[in-house]
Image (cartoon, rainbow, N blue to C red; front, top):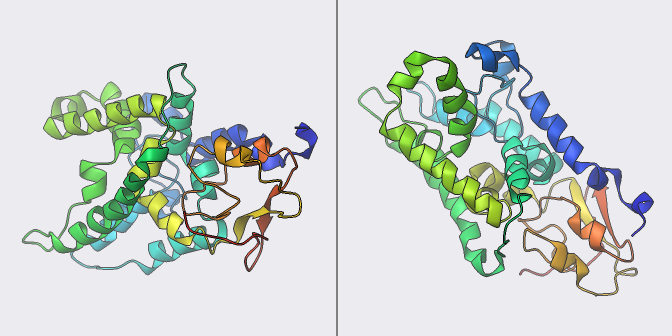
Length: 294
C-alpha cells in the first residue's frame, strides 16, 4: 500500500505514543532524586493509565483518583473525575488506549521482542474480566469495604495494578533506602503480577489491556458513541478479510467498525488494499456500514 495514502495518525502512531508517555511523565529529573512532583498538575487527570506515584508523573491517574475519592470518609462520588472520564470517553473512546496510554505502549514494545506469538481469538471471553475489575475493584470495594473511620482502600491500585510497581515502587525503591526496607509481601505479589504481564505481553498482544484494565473497560463502554470513530467505505471494501487478519485486538472492523475492543491503532488501515478504512471525527454514526455484534 502506498504510504502516502495512510492517515498520518496511523503512520506516526509510535511517535505519538512516545510523545504522550513523555508528556504524561514530564518530570524526568525526579527519577534520579527519588521524589514525586506535587504541583498543581497533580489535580488534573491524565487520560491513560499512569501511576500517581511515578516520580515523573505530571498528573493524576483517573482510576487512582476515582478510588481515592469514593474511598474517603468525606465523599462517596466525584463528579469532577467521573465527568473528566466521560469527556475523554465521548471525545476519543479507546483511541486513548491505542495512542495515549503509557502502559499500553509499554506492552506493545514488549510484544516486539522476537518470540513465538500466540493468538487471543479463542480467549475472547476473558475480555469481560476487565468489566468485573472496573465494577468490583474500582467501584464497589472502595465504596463498601471501609474501616472504622469510613475509609476504603484503593483496591485496584493496591492489589492488582502493575503500573504502580513499574512506575512507582521500583524507581522509588532504587533511590530510597527507607522505601526498600518497607517493601514486603504486597510488593512481592504485585511484582509477580507485573512479571506475568511482561511475559504475557511478549507472546500475547496487550494482554492487560484486553483482559484486566478497568480504564480500558470504561472507555470501551463509550467507544460506539465517541466522536472519534472508524469508518468503512462499503463501496471500496472488497471483503478480502485482510483487515480482520491484521487486527491484533480480534475485531472484524467490516462487521463492527466501532467495536468495544477497537483501540483505533490503524493496523486494519495499513492492511486494507483498497483504502476503504478511515478515521472520522464527528457526531452520529460515521461507520457507513451495517454493524453486527461479534
